[in-house]
Image (cartoon, rainbow, N blue to C red; front, top):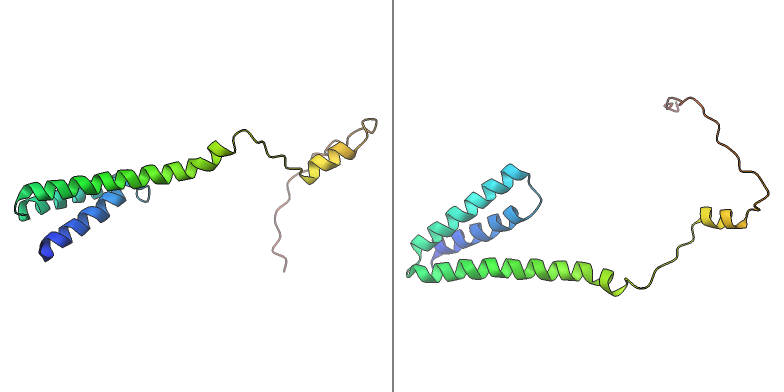
Length: 121
C-alpha cells in the first residue's frame, strides 16, 4: 500500500468512528458518514485488486462492531452480576426519620417569598 491508500484508510477509520459516536449532531454525523463512504470508495479505486480494499473496509467495520459490543458488555456486566444484591444506603435523613418519635408532630414548612441573591460586597 502506498501513502494515498494509507491516508484514505485513516480518513475512513476516523470519520466512521465520528459518524458512529455522539460527539456531533445529526448533520455532522451525516457529513462524517459521507466522508467515510467517499474515502472507502476512493480507497477501493486506488487499491489493486479492489477486492482487497473491500475486505479491509469490511474488517474495519466488523472490528468497530466487535469493539462496541465488548464495551457495551463491560458496561453492563456489573449490573448483571449485582442485580440480586440490593445495596442499602442510609442517608442522614433516613437515620433522623428512624430516630424520631411517632408522637411528635412534624414541622410544616413556612412559605416565604424568594429572595434575590446578593453580591456580598
